[in-house]
Image (cartoon, rainbow, N blue to C red; front, side, top):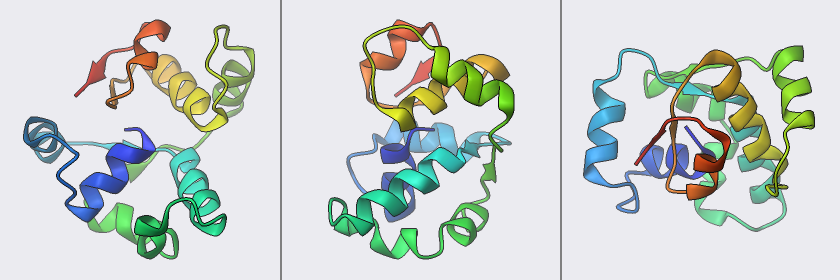
Length: 123
């Protein structure tokens, strides 16, 4: 799932639609990328995402506590993220796209830019 969806799920934020929350709660395995941990930590350090502070300080335990799994970043993921064509410049999202493509996974996100990369998007 993308970083916003993860944070919103963890915080019980209403910006995550009930249908999307239901899908996440019913899936046997939900992955969170280390890129999301990096993004949360970076943005909270910079003061750009104060609501995620409590998550940033203990993200590994938050992921496990929610019953989610981390999806390690491989060399293949990194190479694909670096080589991705298109206009999307966000390095965190590029990694999520690369991981979804490489592992044939859907991505949970409200961001329609993911559709341009031919991956299934759940929202």
